[in-house]
Length: 183
Image 1 (cartoon, rainbow, N blue to C red):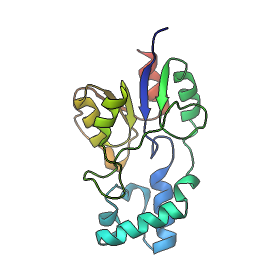
Image 2: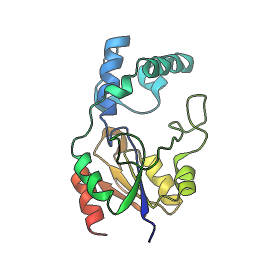
Image 3: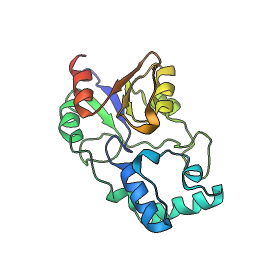
Image 4: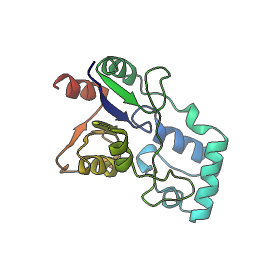
């Protein structure tokens, strides 16, 4: 039996509406006035606070289970169900579809609140062939490790005129399906 190729799928703003849920919680809890297009993963800068305060707020997000309340991108499930017949899918969410769950650092530098490996190194280690992610930096890192990356969505934080070789833009889950149907 031939081993299936691996597709690694990011959760935030690929499977779940992270930016929307994050800013909604931030606005209610800390009185910020954010909109989803303001979102980026440098939370201290986003909130306009010192790093120690951003770490304290991140702890609140985790403790309150905010991430579990995010809505799923409904178009993902049928596409992933179809892909799971040809590929091994790795990540968390949509119980029963994903073969493995891996955690990578979300910030550029290693902190107490990030895993010890960057996404590109982790993807190479697990033998991933593809990555679906909304962050340009993770897609570029994947491509540097000879892993094809699909830059997902048309978000304010992932706009780019030119994408490096091995990085393909897909606007939505239909675009993901079309990419893999062409393979």
